[in-house]
Amino acid sequence: MGRGLFGVKLRWWIIGLVMLGAILNYLSRSTLGVAAPTLNTELGITTQQYSYITSAFQLGIMMQPLCGFVLDTLGLRTGFALFATAWSLITIAHGLANSWPMLAGLRGLLGLAEGSANPAGMKAVSEWFPARERGMAGGVFNMGASVGSMLAPPLVAWAILTYNWQAAFVITGGLGLVWVVLWLVCYRAPERHPALSDAERAEIVEGREAHTLSDGTRPSILRLLRQRNFWGIALPRFLADPTWGTLAFWVPLYLTTVRGFDLKQIALFAWLPFVAADLGCLFGPSVVLFLQKRGVKLIDARRWAFTVGAVLMIGVAFVGMVDSPYLAILLLCLGGFAHQTLSVTVITMSSDLFRRNEVATVTGMAGTMGNLGVLLFSLLIGGLVMTVGYTPFFIALAVLDLLGAVVLWTLVRDPGGSTPGQGAGSSAALVDARP
Image (cartoon, rainbow, N blue to C red):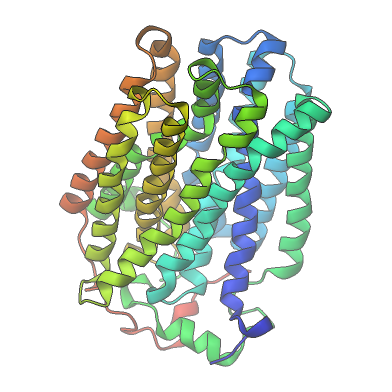
């Protein structure tokens, strides 16, 4: 088998590059949550207005199907570079905001551009990895979300304490522009990458299922909407994704207003749930591999991994009930771990169930459902938290994930028996690929 730099196959370097883009994507989107206590005070933004600002982002990111369609049409290299340039410049422009409506408008635009991250990541996984490695590759890519969100509290707190809240947005946006240059220099599609050996290319092609091969056509959104497998992964995302929105946008405010943390304490503790989430990104695929080695089919193994994460999410229901703020943080860490265990599992299923030329579009459409869930949940928090507190919302997160597991088991059907390599051993697997 061909080996790349330092004995690591090229496809793992590629997913590392994609993960780095995801890190910067989630770093820039998480900047607002960490800066919120300072920014809200300086601009006179109320809790209700802050919920409108976060909701604007969710409205923008619900355009993920557009991002996926662009990526499937233009190709991963060009499409992802365009979106990354846009989100970096929009992040920098946040530093010019002087009112909540202006900030809300920028957040909407940011959501539109940043909605490209998950479709791009899953498109890279579907193009570069055989079936047996897609779960772990998806886990590595999704670690970018956790790492970016983890880096935000210390980096943003440092920028605010050293300069001001505006500098935090300029720094995170500037890092994104640096990554765009690296992406354009290093990335090519697998059939055009000069560093990909014939042996590794054959390994990738032979490890694909027949039903995932590209048919060379543009994806049809209406046809995809008629498939039960789409709803089988989209509805669980609608139910589960509010956990991530809560961790990213509301936990810093919760720790400040309910637990009495100051900005330095936020910098010390608010990133810990995202470290746990990193472990969840690897735990979910590990559960799948463990079950596959014991004869469980791929799709069923993914369903069981999602279910394990949903059961672990029960711990989050007790965040608002414990007296110790440190025990509350520990439970939030459990929530980050559990959420990414199930999230990376259901996101990866788009590459198991659909053709390669549909994966980015399907991921974007499912992402829209997930972000609709975040939007509605965020509006409920903004409208009710001053009346009922945070505890009912933490309980709801646990219940929603358990419902998501029920939906996943009920709706998803295995289209091909999960047997890799059937009809995949020819160059047809690389039909209609673009750089």
